[in-house]
Every structure is written in C-alpha cells, then in structure tokens.
Image 1: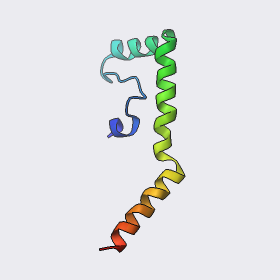
Image 2: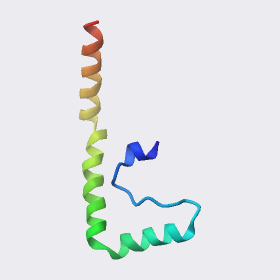
Image 3: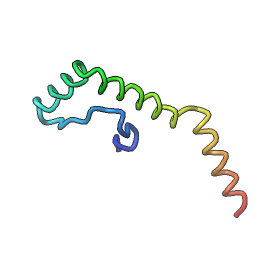
Image 4: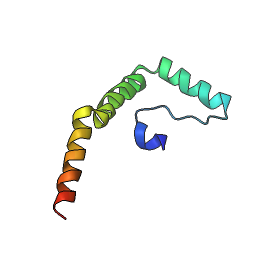
Length: 68
C-alpha cells in the first residue's frame, strides 16, 4: 500500500474529491511550515529505500536463514 511507502511524508487526499485535492494543493503552496515538514519527512523516509539500507536488510535476512 502507498501508506507503507509514503508514511507521513505526503499530503493525503480523497482522490474522488476535487475539493480535497484542491485543499491539499493550497495547503502545500501556502503553508511554508507544512511544506518544509513534508520535504523533511520525505527526505528521511527515502533513506529507508537506499541501496545501502536494502543491502543491509538482505544481508541480515541471509545471515538469519543460514543459521537455521
């Protein structure tokens, strides 16, 4: 699910509601603190998907499987 990937680094909207989408866009455009928070959270969240992080997770999994 997209929620697992994006975490709190996204402005969630009701995709069937034009008003919901409009309000989210306006908030991101007008609210500098909110926008900066999304950027900061997104940057931090992206680290979960770095090559180094994924490689470490695979290594840990392989080590765990080799002990069984």
